[in-house]
Image (cartoon, rainbow, N blue to C red; front, side, top):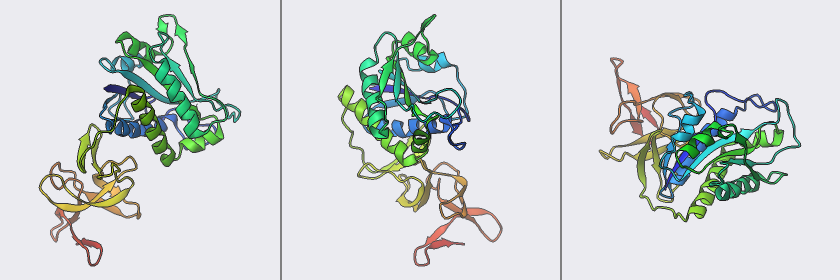
Amino acid sequence: MKICLDAGHYGKYNQSPCNGAYYESDMVWKLHLMLKKRLEEYGVTVITTRPNQETNRELYDRGAASAGCGLFLSLHSNAVGSGRNDSIDYPAAYCAINHSADDIATKLAACVEAVMQTKQEGRIEHIKGKNGDYYGVVRGATAVGTPGLILEHSFHTNARSTAWLMDDGNLERMAQAEADVIALHYGLTKQQRPAGWYEDDKGWWYQHEDGTYPKGCWEWLREATGGTEGWYLFDDAGYMLTGAQIAPDGRMYYLCETPGIHEGQCMVTNDQGALRIAEYDFDRRRYKL
């Protein structure tokens, strides 16, 4: 199966009135990458509508990018006006008016309700515009024959919901739950994939034998090609970092940016100031300078 995931907004968009650190665009970017990984564990081919968070793209074109997919899913958090309102928190799925996505949308809205434990029930809605579906992304998906929906993860105008959505651990739980619901709906089973390095359009990541992967940490791993070993630093989404990075211990490291067997490994300077791959001293638990 092939699914198109859409991070609903680009850049820094829709700041929460409950917490100035929350932007809807940040949340949906993280969530759609997490969901992509979880769906791929079920053997799903996942495409995304943006190469990076900074890229803007027309609404209709994002939906139309789902040509050949079995589902178009745009991720969002909702808002009630521009101010705080803690009385409204229901998850909603805005579905294509041809009802092609109603069944999966109903299940996903219920999933968001259960995982976030919202006070109000999840629901689906259909909004008609002058030229078909009101929402451009859904209209674009419908035009290429893809069942499409927008999934609102409660409201970022609700203080409790905003705090919940700002927790990356909660987003991981949500991504897993949504992937499981989609897999059950379409009769998919998890694919057994050997431990090792994997690359997608976002970068390199490492999967353990149990299906988990390192994120937000260092991990000692054997590189897939060449057999070299080293410490690798992963971001909060689980992707290997390169270049100048600040590690969880607060120190700055420079990680090899050159594609190949040393990519991601720590580098230090020699006596002449030239960069070289660092050797790790296990007895002293630090890199040899």
